[in-house]
Image 1 (cartoon, rainbow, N blue to C red):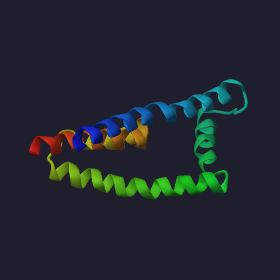
Image 2 (cartoon, rainbow, N blue to C red; image 1 turned 90 degrees about the vertical axis):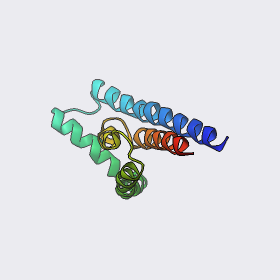
Image 3 (cartoon, rainbow, N blue to C red; image 1 turned 60 degrees about the vertical axis):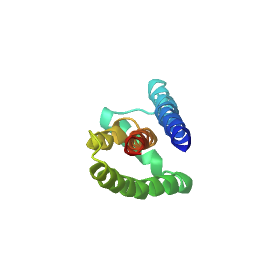
Length: 119
């Protein structure tokens, strides 16, 4: 029973980690389209990452997430190897291509499935 609950939670957080971050990406894209952010592709990309540090609040969240990312990547390697998960290395690029919330949720979902097999 608890395994099904965990699978549901991990699946839901993966879905939320796919949808919610892209809501904000779309807002940024709209700012660029409307001319609120201008410049070359490099300037726009720089603005995107600079905004993550623009206020103390956003800086706190960015710093906290950055440190958390290191621990999660170590966890991916350790658990991926320990459980012999297939394609455990795919979660690294998924983190940067989609979002940390998505990649971690999917990793935990796949980990839970593997643990369920062992029971």
